[in-house]
Image 1: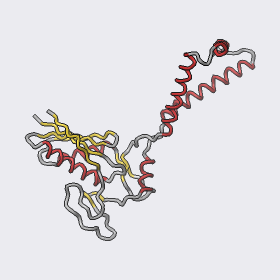
Image 2: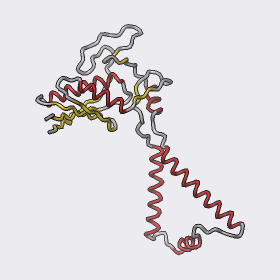
Image 3: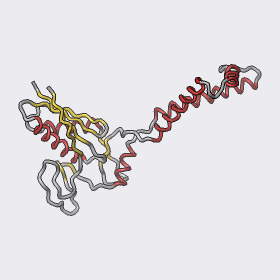
Image 4: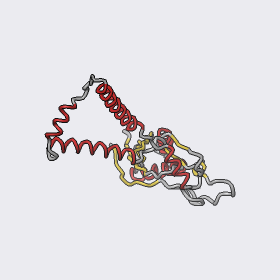
Amino acid sequence: MTEQFPKQEVCAVPAEGEAPPGGPAQSGPSEGVPPEVGGTRQVTRDRAADRAAVRAFRPNRRVPAIVVSVLLALLGLLVAAETISGLAGRPLRLVPYDRMLGWAASTLWSNPLFLLGSAVAALIGLALLVTALVPGRPGMVPVRSGDPDVIIGLRPKSVTRALAHAAEEVPGVHSARATIRGHTVAVTPATSGWDKERFAQEVRTAVLTRLAGLNPVEPYRVAVNVKERK
């Protein structure tokens, strides 16, 4: 039996002197010593450093670029082969140009086939343009370093393992599993004989505290789905 608790929280790194979620208040750090949350060094937020970290791990769109490059190269080779063979007096005619020109000369702009082909070509071009302009999700989880020249990233698998371990440290948790989907961390702890709503809040607090300790650049929501162990 699984119970769903849709309430979500956003991970926020505590400011100096503030308490992490569910933790005791901390006094101001000594000069030159950064504050710590859960044993992890906290780094002051720097927007330039955050942007550099996100850009560093952003996908390069290699697959769409390779596909377009290969298609353009094949098209260029085809045009070159047809041109050279035509100049030599022995055209290859790999493409039926005569029939294509005849069809184009006898087809009206309002022809459904012509409109359909134009729409498909426009959609393909728009999809390629959006793919090139819209940034993709980073392959790593960027974390704050405080320096634009120092780029730090964590593997998503390492992050989910750390968050699952944090959930397992809550009393009553037999096991836990964590996954990252976009900006949401889904945690599934297994327990038995507990107040599910209060238990979910304790797990959420523990996971948020560990997230704050990891100090990610981007905010993450935490969704807890308590699974009853039979």
